Length: 372
Image 1 (spheres, rainbow, N blue to C red):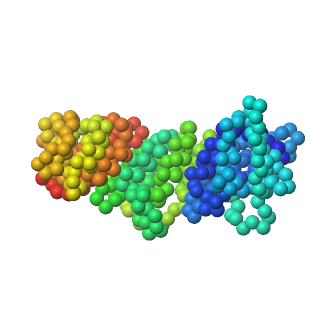
Image 2 (image 1 turned 120 degrees about the vertical axis):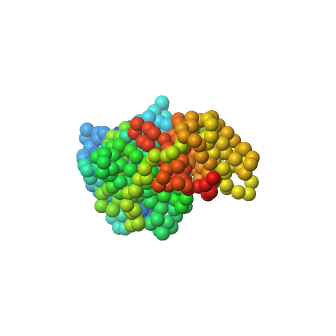
Image 3 (image 1 turned 180 degrees about the horizontal axis):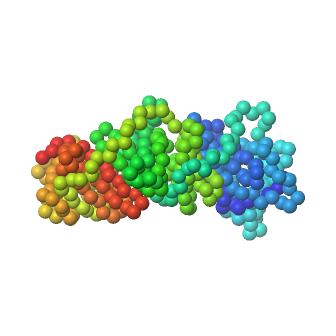
């Protein structure tokens, strides 16, 4: 068999497969049905990049048993600056060749042996029932909800059982969903359209899911098949999959967002102020957060560390908040206006940090250390 491929598409497929570091130390490369598939998997996750083949006129259809192993340290063989790529297969393996500008490079990749006990590459997921959502929107949802998801702290099986993000179809708005995450003293609720499905996802899977979405140019399909959450790029057929972990899935409870008082500031002003306070504070995480007049202030005791202009509604408020949590929230907010609300009757000691967008809206709830 001999076929030509788009070298840029091959590079993109390999980039997708590399989202998951292969537990076997190599990538599986399959040639079947007129497609090249590059597959990687670890204990719970897998990623598959797909490229369409253009078969030579005298080549036979690619058989289902055409599978090869590309060692992880040789993955750069699929990433060349030469534009023309061809592959050919023989009894011993696959030969890849790049050509362009009078230059050529070639290498061989070993065929899978009949005695290999490695898992066979899985077939394409059935995404007919999945929800379609713009890739950039889903990536934004994952970015915001990761604020309270304890991504870096999720390492052990017990961590994965506890630290999960939860998707709930909105019963009052079909086709929309709430996404929640919860840390000990703060939590996040995101609302998004185009995603009316229910599932839970392990927090440590968020970076890989975001990486996949960032590489998709249009929409992605999101859903659950069997025991795995899957995200599919319909333009290429590539996908990632994350095995679900059984854990406690709380019932959906969205607090009433009404607050007695609020102040609105620019996100960049808030981010810079919090970073400054993180450096200025000594020996404590306690930051007094107060709004009065048209100003949002951040104090340490009686010392003002930072202040910024804002638009105040109501009489103002003051509470002590952990600066580390505020810093985490500031990193997950989008550019634009940020609203700080206080005095929700059902959450008297909580500050609500919210943003509204046409596609995605978010609220971060931060429990005060002391109410004044």
